[in-house]
Image (cartoon, rainbow, N blue to C red; front, top):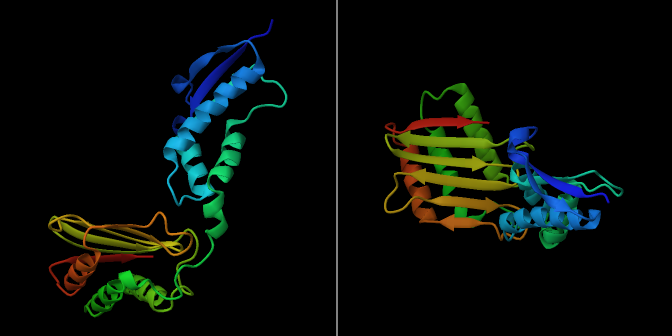
Length: 229
């Protein structure tokens, strides 16, 4: 009688056999498949957050999940990655339906203070050409939102820092992010998506206060200014 052993690889350590382990031996192929699906489901359920698209969840799986496979293989051959892709589509169906829907016709009002940051940064004298171009491009993305957002796989990045204090902002094709360091009483962490349901948006801390402080830093030469595109 043929038995089926279920081995599990670690996607994070792809091709590293030292990370492989056995999840058991089964009398039937169907039992092995059921166990394999359970391993994938466990990761997806723990990694899933409201507002995730199927691509985001699947990307997390192929980067950090486990990849079970059965020896000997039978038909239909079980593929953990194919199963994960199908499950991600099922779990994130609602978010996928609105993933391309623009939520704002203009730059989000809650983030309006970022425009002042860019204006004041551009008012600095002696800016390196690359920094000026990055700031100008970022400002255009804000003023003419959403027509001039950066291209896919690109982003605008602005950072102001002095000692232990720092403000870092990113404008991506699909979202805005802002983090602060050394800002009392608590750091600020902002993650705002331009499309979709907005269920993953995060406003932690005093966002308006952080943007106002970043604007003051932009006009303060004691803060080093960096920007990139």
